[in-house]
Length: 492
Ligand code: EPZ
Image (cartoon, rainbow, N blue to C red):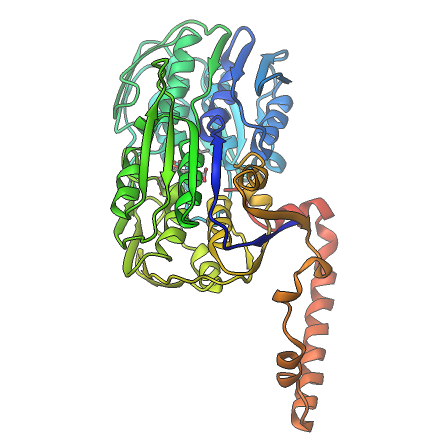
């Protein structure tokens, strides 16, 4: 397993290009299940999640072929498989995006329930409610959703939930409605740019969808969907992460290939924090701009709430928290999409941040100085926040479990290093932990157990540990090494 060793304290400087959006590419790849011809997608980032979905689609009769310039060609060669197996789905929640396309195109879908997630509760009740409204028969058995329908029928669907609408749920119901009989209207549809991009692809395949990017969608079902070619939108979450990388290191960074319309809430909040950004629109008139982060000495505290689009994305909440940990005063961060998405707080505190939870919020008492430490990533965006904080911290840091990062960022350390960061990917073992982060012998000795009572205590402790290890070992044979490794953290 890999880890990062980061030497912090360097202001970043230079230019970097944003990749295609993971959260657009994944549902869009799943839509290929509905096409009566090849789908060619451009700007599909080379990510672990993209590879996992290609594997899953492979088990569902779709061949995916990587082509030059991050293009991906997908073609159905066998339209009989309908089972999305737990072994693949548990690695990546976005696998649920095969549910709608399978059901509407093949009349049946057996898809593993995604299971638990570190960022909070993530039910799929709205997905199922929408598909049932279109006439699907749905039951849950042995951890699988079993959905059947000879022919779906257009209907009125309300997709609003306690935390707003659902991004992948809107995609699933939109897909199902695209090949249904008659007209479907979706109210309280998700408005995220990734959902609109998904709809653009379906329309390019021959679907009839109106209202994309708004909470009200009208879908007139069609008989079949053809192959198509599509350029995936740039990744607004990656763009925000790179902008914050420049700001948190008081650096000067230019981020290219950005759709500024997708980043209004992020740019607004960065402005509140005092981050100076100059926007250079494409002289060629395309919707892609370059954003220049200018050095900003003082960061101003603020309050921010993660909300459904067009609000501040929950997927940049952790990165903003890292930035605000260096602001000059008290900030408050609340997440109204995933109220418990705060696993990164304790790790940022290890890097010297002063943060505590209060209900759905985190209270951040900004400090000028962060310092290096060993930390552990617990989900994709939390790991990005730890990289940002470690780059701003004095000294060296170790970030473990960076496999989370590889799921959603394409070679992030190489691009940050091209801006002057010092991030080394190394095998996660004791020898590779920098001396500066090893417990100095003096502390080790002063804290070791010397008195007789302590020695007895230690022996007892050792016995207890051995018992625990023994009982764990008796349990272990049930899981294959791969399974136990994968079981470490559920997919986000
Ligand atoms: C998408 O997840 C993204 N993933 C997430 O990004 C992102 O955090 C999330 O949208 C919110 O923006 C992909 O696009 C692959 P939701 P999704 O259904 O679709 C509740 C990342 O870091 N809800 O919009 O699974 C749910 O619990 C990932 O890239 C229900 O109650 O999220 C949550 O509180 C992490 N019932 C809220 O709605 C449902 O049936 C939004 O969830 C569905 C969702």
